[in-house]
Image 1 (cartoon, rainbow, N blue to C red):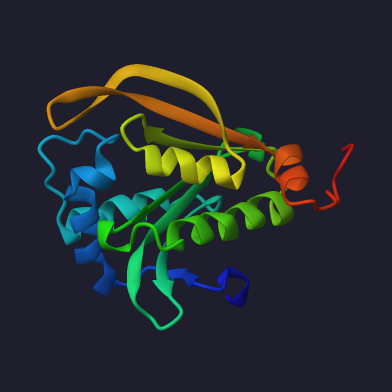
Image 2: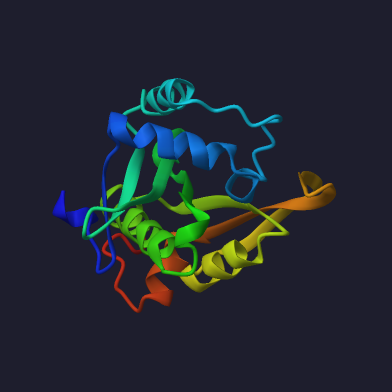
Length: 185
């Protein structure tokens, strides 16, 4: 599991003890404004069911994000699409951990796995237009805006766009100045 360890965080399988924190993240409109489950009512048990359902495919995962000293700060998910050419990536950290680089490093670890080990061609993620921090962080990773779903989310009584961003395999390697072992295939 050391391949999912960076300078700030490690990714690990979630544990039962994580579910209450994860449910709290699911109920916080700052972390789930795009999701629009109204009213927010996640419980540890409903969170377990949701996460177990997401992991039924061998080509998806939900991993806890913890600091190197073992503090739980959020979770990251991925799910590969048909023919394993595309994957959806998501990361959620508690607002008390924003701006510390935890979500960015967790996403970077999963992107490396998806592009380098799984041979994925494109990774997508979703955010909202009110979440400039997430859009800026995704852009720093190399993601580019792909589409906007106008007025698809609500935050504090205002409507905002859902923003879909993506990164191609080629962009991943160019931004990181790495050689793609599968280039031309």
